[in-house]
Amino acid sequence: MAEVVIVPDRTTAGALVADHIAAVIRRRPDAVLGLATGSTPLPVYAAMRERLADADVSRVRGFALDEYVGIDLAHPESYSSVIAREVVEPLGLDPDRILTPPAHDADLAGAGERYDAAIRAAGGVDVQLLGIGTDGHIGFNEPGSSFASRTRVKTLTRQTREDNARFFDSIDEVPRHCLTQGLGTILDARHLVLLAFGEGKAAAVAGAVEGPVSALLPGSAIQLHPHVTVVVDEAAASRL
Ligand code: GLP
Image (tube, rainbow, N blue to C red; front, side, top):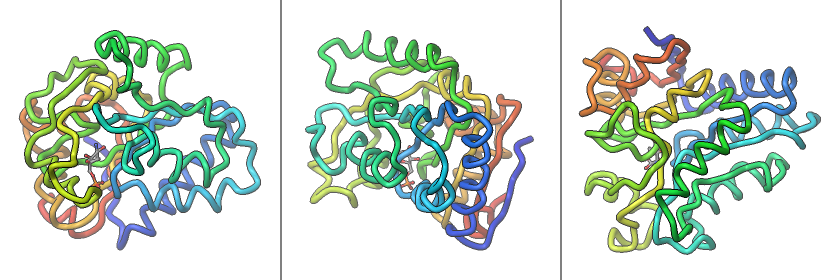
């Protein structure tokens, strides 16, 4: 079973996970990070900033989980913009070594395969950060996603578009499709760190950690992985 760490608040979670990632980078300056977007990992990135202030991060590599299809790359809510703003710039990483799925490629199927190949060529992901959607999605692998799936185009559910509408002026602006790492891609990472905060995530967390392993709750795929750490606050842990 996954190691579950219950912390009092997001700041404590951010500090805990940032300590771990900073240690990985100090040990291995060319570490490969799996980067998540959404609000959940923000305390981790904020805490990494302090911990890595004097570290050599020039060789760190990173791969984001997902990107919207059909959004202008320069849009502030494209995941490419979010990763640049929240991770690359504040941490002083090399932007050429931090990739998001190329959702603007005319050949999207090929783009997914090439993204997976780039992850493999980098030696695979050392630490994969994950949030979880209220419907149990990880990355943008919505319910019904195959556990063997690789990076590919997915259609966002109404629920996910409603959840993410807060980042846009209206739900009509939320893209309908995305290019996301598959569950199989995510499971290839050597260590998964799933974070969740708040009561709204309690059901998804319980399903992911203790529920039946089912494509209906994609987060339950973490039960197939030998090295998983789940960091949650009391509210997100309330149904465990
Ligand atoms: C988004 C992202 C996921 C994220 C999840 C939760 O749609 N694609 O990677 O984990 O939904 O978002 P949040 O952390 O804002 O609750």
